[in-house]
Every structure is written in C-alpha cells, then in structure tokens.
Image 1: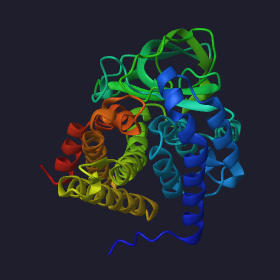
Image 2: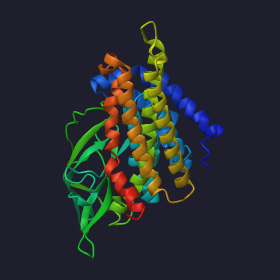
Image 3: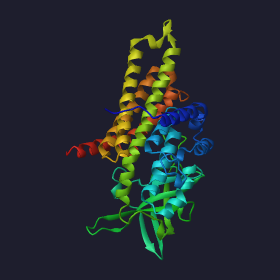
Image 4: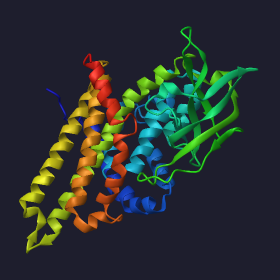
Length: 383
C-alpha cells in the first residue's frame, strides 16, 4: 500500500510554503499575470527560504532534501500561481539538476551554490522550432575550434532564459556524427550574457504570463571546451533522464493547480447564493466539486508513487509518464469545471479560476505532450 503520510519535516515544509503562497504570492499573482511582469521580489524571497536548493546536498549550497520535498513546494505554490511554481520547477529540475547529475566537481562548485541561492536562474535549452516532441531532430550545432565550442542555431519556448538574473543556459547541440551516422548530440553549459547569445522577444502566451519564456538565438557563440556537460554524445540521453524526473515535478505542479481549482470552487460555492441558498447546496454543483476532489486525490497519489519509486532507486519511467498524463488531465478538467461553477465571473480574467483555465492547458503540452506520455506508457507495456 502506498503510504501518503508526510513526515513531520515534510509537513512542516508543506505548511511553510502554503503559508508563503497564501500570504505573499497570492495577493500579487493577478497583478503579475495582468502585466506580464516577472516576480523578482517573490523569487528573491523563495531563494532566501532555500526553495531553489531543496533537492541538492548542503556541500553545493543546497538544503539537503530530496526531489519529493521539491515537489511538495511546487504543489503548494501552484495552488495559487502556476507561473511562480514553474519558475521554481524549471530553476531546479531543468536549470540546476543537469549540472548536479552530470557535471564535474568544478562545474558543480561553480554553479550550484549560485543556483541554489536563487540569486541566479538556470535554463534548459532543448526544444527547437522543428524539434519539440522529436528532440532528436536538433539542428543547433557546436564545433570545436581552438579549445572552444562554437555554437550556432536557435531554441524555442525556453523558461527562465531571459530574466535579469539568468546566468546559465544548458544547450543541446549536434557535435558530430555517431559511428552509425546519426547526429551526436551533446550538452554544453553557456554562461550568459555572452557575445553571440541573443534573447529574442518574449512570447505572447495564453497563460503563465508571469513566467519568463523566450526563444534564443546563437551566432558563433563561443564557450570554453571544458563547458561540455557530461560525456560527449550523451547529451540527448542525459536530458531524457532529466525529463523523466521533471515529469514528476510537473505532475506536482498540475496537482497543485487542480487543488487550487477545488479551493476556489469550494469557497465560491459556499458564498454565492442563488434562489435563496448557497449554490453548493445544489447537487449539480456539489457533485461537480466532488469529482474535482477525486481527480486531484488520484493525481496526487500518482505523483507520490512515481517520486517514491525514483527515490528508492526503482524504475519509474512509466509511473512518471502516468503521473504526468493523469495530473495534467486533472488540472485541465478541474479548471474547466471551476470556471463553470463560477459562471460569468469565471470568464473574467480577475477570477483565479479563469487564470487556472488559461494556465493549465500548457500542462498537457510541456515536458512531453499527453500523446508522448501515452506513447511512453504503451512502449513500457511492450506495445
């Protein structure tokens, strides 16, 4: 039986982040969403709380926790603001985790203390305009010249890539050909800003307005040869493993979003009156909220299980894909139901349910689309 009981330390962290989310993040979330501004002050406070260092050892400036504690924090933040939750998720699992998993000791000691403090953000440059789900179709290139990697190409939809505190972007690039004639994809650390590194204008997105997302361009961008991250030619494989872990964190974010929709719907159903009584007394509303709670519970169990398997050193690829699929569906379905429960007010951007409705769609796309998750699950079943 899966034990979903949190330890005393985990529950303390969860409550601390929940309190921070309610008192600090929630009051300004609508403003940052409406203006599309990055919440630097909140990110600074999160850094001071140690949230960006949660899953990393103390020797590298981290908090000495694990991946599950990071997921608990992401879930609580996503209940009130998905933009700030994805900023933490991407900063840890995509920005810093590749350095921790595959970096040399010199690379870890240079970058992890800075990233764990929240004083700097790292980004993960994998996706390209023509290589999204098919990341193996990477067209960005890097060639060795006089002890430097010379990088040319572009990346798309990169989170945390253009903030004032972005200092590191890990880029996947074709560095040659394998013996079988296939592209050799490697990962290279790029310290930014740098000549030849261009942050293109931000996207006009449907949701996640306070999350920083840009396309990137590289033109004869030069970085030292020792900035190779991990083994040459293993960049694609290494990042696939990072994505497997990241799916658990995105699942936690989706569960937080789904729970946030339950929170807002419960509050509204108890306060809003129609025909002389709260609308929550109507079976049509109460049953809808019950279904929302059931989806959230099921999705939470799925990501708890995937995280437990990962931390125990057991295979978790299939379970991570299941968690991502189930939780992203729950977030989108709950957002749709929450908007319906709120009626006309739910169609107003000022309504938290409306923000969740706009924000949640990307959860069925990012970190592997729902179709990719189904493909992975089917493949793990031998199909």
